[in-house]
Image (tube, rainbow, N blue to C red; front, side, top):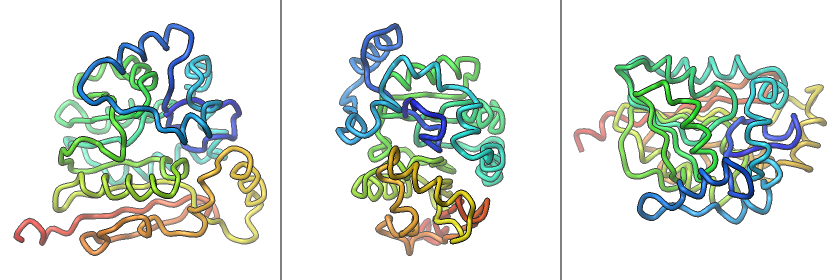
Length: 262
């Protein structure tokens, strides 16, 4: 949803934004004024992540693959491949937040012109930046919306890529339920995020330091399953795979097809 100020800060690459001085700020202000019931930037985001996501100067500075590579400990391409392995060309997909780097353009290419990609973000400045990056993909829509209230549409799949770690507990639950409610029977929600690593992982201490200093809401992913944040888990089949010594995880929730007949 927005921007980071250090390379190891926001392991996700997802960014949001608040407006301040600068050209992107003017675009952001225009965005927020358009459309009914535009969501406000949440207080937690302003308070905990302004330095990372809400400072317009950093939007361009951190929107590059090198930042993502360093913040994901060199695992960015592998984790992206794992997310994309759950998707197919021609699908209608919701991406739950704007992302730094080229994740979204790569996803747009995967889905192809017969598919449809919707990218949402709660920060107008990120919506504006993402629209510029994806302007050459007519099958992509970028809109201003909160992942906790994505809009009531139904998708073949939802991709939640390194978003959960940056949400307070109540927001984690709201977002999990909202995204799970956005897929049709047979559809799936793909969560890729942090996970508690093996006790002897050489980067466990470094990751813990990052959480303590820059990611105040991330540690709960070390103590809870992503499914724990959802209300109606029985409506989905769940599977989980971990990577890089357990430091990262992919959780896929597929909505049971039998619901279509109910």
